[in-house]
Length: 161
Length: 161
DNA sequence: AACCGATCATTGACTTTATCAACGGTATGG
DNA sequence: CCATACCGTTGATAAAGTCAATGATCGGTT
Image (cartoon, rainbow over all chains, first blue to last red; front, side, top):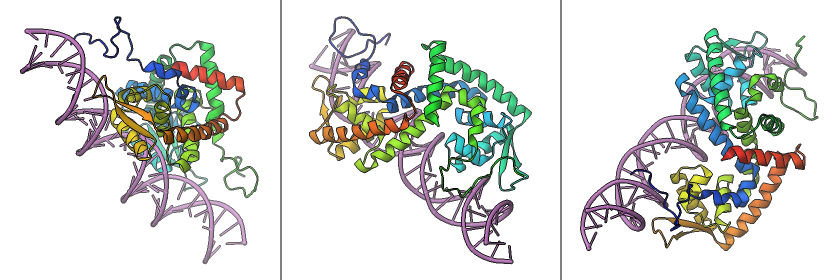
């Protein structure tokens, strides 16, 4: 027990990490594809964990955010913007509706379409969740300066659409 | 009468998506969390599609890349670096082994551990896949300048570990 | 040498996400 | 009115992620 020293090399001095950082020298660490996947994994992992007390995950938050934005998104639009299948939107809206956070409103101009709007409780939930996510993001971006954060946002925005 | 253009213009021109870009004004488009998820979705979607003829996906490529790197990764290390469960590594190595691309070699220093190394055919596959992924990345990063691409890589690298 | 707790790869059960086809209700254009 | 396309919904299925348990092996201790 105690602080079990990392097993690895018969090095006289115990190296701190388990030594996978040597892979940073590999080709993979230059692939944007890999880096985004990895960053996203870390980020959403932490965010979901922080969000758990509210009973939602980041995917629900995405829907809630748009529902509370006043932009009156339809489910189809949610699916398109969030890059999710319509059937997944149904499930997400269902659970948010069960939480009393959002409401389906039939679009009077097209009765097939349903507009998702946040209830008062939904707006409240959204704001709580938003605070949490801002903190989570702050943790995730820990080492980045304010300018770098802005740069990152700008760059990601360009390639995300 | 509809102020907003509905879907379905039969214009055989550049058919962009119906107006979901209005959501870019929303709060969500500022969340790094969301942007990385979206960027990653687009990227890996395209990459997997381009990679399909080779019979592998990006997840396999990640393993193959490290296997072909000469860095002699063990499965545990692969899991740690790729942020995947050990059981998933087993499955990935299995399929790559069936393709004849990699080989399990028992680490003589620790017979529990298996080192994954690429075969000659594996190296060949890796190089083909690498070319494809470079092209795919080039598409994904389309609008970014060379300098911006480097910036993005640097920033992602900082937050991915 | 023999035990002990820890680690590695593996398997299996299970949950969550993702993908796809089909269907009722509705709109649009002929 | 009719044909066609679309929206949300359901259900089936596949892929990905999570978790616990196990056999083999290790390191350290007695």
